[in-house]
Length: 300
Image 1 (cartoon, rainbow, N blue to C red):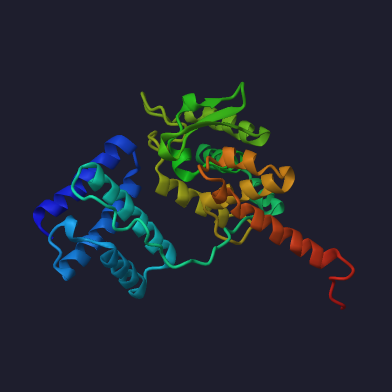
Image 2 (image 1 turned 180 degrees about the horizontal axis):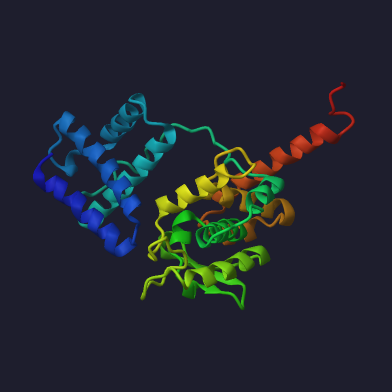
């Protein structure tokens, strides 16, 4: 590709950083997706974005899939391309979006794994003997109590937590803020951690969860601590932050049947994202039916 073509990618990424406030991880994904398209254009000897048409994008998507990229990844890559081309239209570089009508191959919908209520209880009943283990328990309780994403948890400041009101304010995807309730057990562990935090935190540090040296705990550190916590429990399975979010959503939906309410709590922009938990709920009910109904039980 000509140097000018690559410059438009950098301008677009700068636009994402400043106007849409996307996370560094999302920006990295966009850069990788657009880099794949640039490599394709080099092979096809397409020097400018104006030469790309619908046929080229179809060929690009087919090659990516043929080379091992899964349907979901192809879908994400095409979404990145559509956003980039819409930006080029806005900047009057091209007149039409060549990726507008291209669809990725359909992917089988994978149901997220969850813990049942007893497994969650087993995970959260371990005794704590030091400030860092009390911090870890507080993180686990808050993840399950309020259904937080990992990025939302590590971004929390002390001022985001309202113990009197039993709520926490989180900054979700797209810089959208939502206020979430905090459960009784989570409040108890958070109060204990805040007492310990006072003896660890560095002056001026606002983070709710800090590490041994008193600074904000990063996402990777949280993942490692939760994995280590689960390894020391009787659960016997790996645990990650999103597993607790999935479990939160599933258990809440089983009890309330309020899909819209769960959508609001999770911070999903589209209710179709939340609907995957109705499939999990149905799978649970199907197992109950098979085990309990006299016409469904297998004879011993």
